[in-house]
Length: 163
Image 1 (cartoon, rainbow, N blue to C red):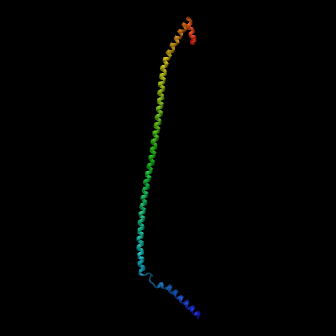
Image 2 (image 1 turned 90 degrees about the vertical axis):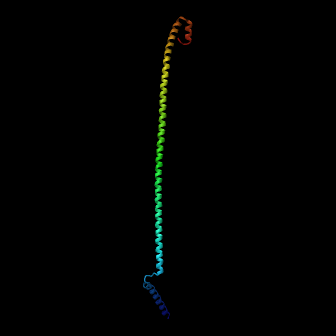
């Protein structure tokens, strides 16, 4: 009896398993009308969601394009600033060279003019000095001649180291 119950249980379990495997085959497609409605709503929602995502990506792409344009503007501005820096450096270098060159030229010309004026002054004074020296030499010769006849004059000239 015990074995009969066990067989009955096995046969019931086997029948249930067979029914479980065969029952989906009896159903047409396994979806109920409410399942189809839900699936249609999910598809509609998914379509709307995908369209919104596409719009968001388009907006993000536009923003990236704007950022790229801004970077290009900044790059152009930076290039302009670098060019301005080079221009200012060239201007200040030119000014420095011009001022230094002018100072050097001015000093050279002033020194040249001063030398020329000094030479002219020395030459002018030397000419007068030469004439004066000739006169003094002649006067000494005359005094030496007189000192031969005058012993007091001769003594004075010796004291002054003129003889």
